[in-house]
Length: 267
Image 1: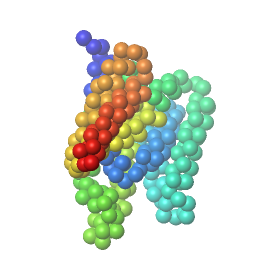
Image 2: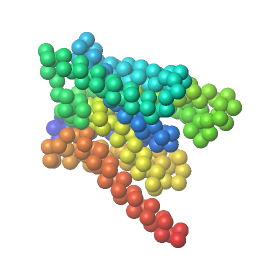
Image 3: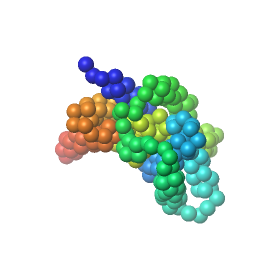
């Protein structure tokens, strides 16, 4: 039978995959992949502050990532810089500050590689509680903002004209992404968490013909990626994060054959 740490990692990974599926679809639809990278990079600063002041890591990452997201929204309104420039500025600045703070934490020993790329040994029972309590809350909030968020994704001006308040939905959605990063940090790591959002959703887009099907296939793809990745990590002693993302990439490549077959049928 599998060790307790592997069971905990599997349960945690499946919980994360259930949340990344729907959120990842909106990230793909709204072309926010670089935005997810920005929040993931800023999470390192949250981790270092958590170790410095003895906070809960997930809580600290959530606070810092949410703060960076809200700062980005305000900068987009108050400056003339393009969005990608602001994303690059905040992503690399927050990552650099986090690494500088890490250099000062010589009195604390922690696994920086595990934080960056995931570590299944680090998953505890408390992490499971955070994932399986925080995950449903994230999905519930997403359901509440579904209509304005989806409408603004299709047509922002029309959503605004109908009084759906798309700006508020966008702000809440960015906070939800920050929350997802906070609960999944130990599974796939800071640098690869965006891959869990984008790759299963991209795979789902290749094989689906409606938003509902895309969300369903994205969840299934995430679940399969976690299962395959964790078993690979256990068998070959590799980092859990890269193994899960590599499994997701494998499923994406398989989905490309579906597109090829569809094109042949149309011709």
